[in-house]
Image 1 (cartoon, rainbow, N blue to C red):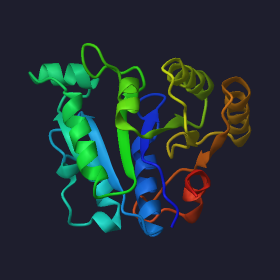
Image 2 (cartoon, rainbow, N blue to C red; image 1 turned 180 degrees about the vertical axis):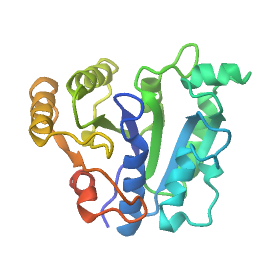
Image 3 (tube, helix red, strand yellow; image 1 turned 90 degrees about the vertical axis):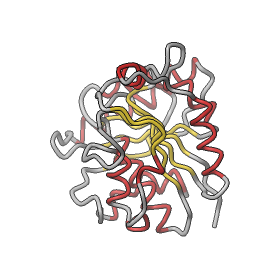
Length: 231
């Protein structure tokens, strides 16, 4: 079994499909015999890790290998207000400590491979009064997988995100588009979006994750873009 690098799933924006991508990575890695660990360092917009809006609860609920396990072990910080982590923490009278997150990463890295981290929002979302989401990537030691919408508007958001990573000397590991159930994208538009990202960003979009209708048992083609990257 070939080793797979630790991955941090980052987005071009909020609601682009990071949690779905992280879920599919976990399902795929377990199916291939790996022992991955999902970590959501900052969760906002939910009361606790068991809340209906908790990304960790979503991943645990739809990953058979995690049935019966506690999603709280995958969350470091959880704040109720649906805001950037810095402001959500401030509303709660708290402060995010990246050393605490690094300690959690090191603990889980000792027992699991690979780690799948899911970031919050886009790359320039504030985590503290000094740090942004993009600053967490080098600290984590994970390769950034950039997740973007498949449809209209994604060229601008994706190219800006690639530019941000490069300005911070962070090499994007890959880019995938995620198609929404609510807003399916025209195939010609998706092809043009992929061409634009390659032409102007210098990165090939590995593929498109099609709309997922059953998160517990996705259709096989849903995994194809991620399989090309991992294996």
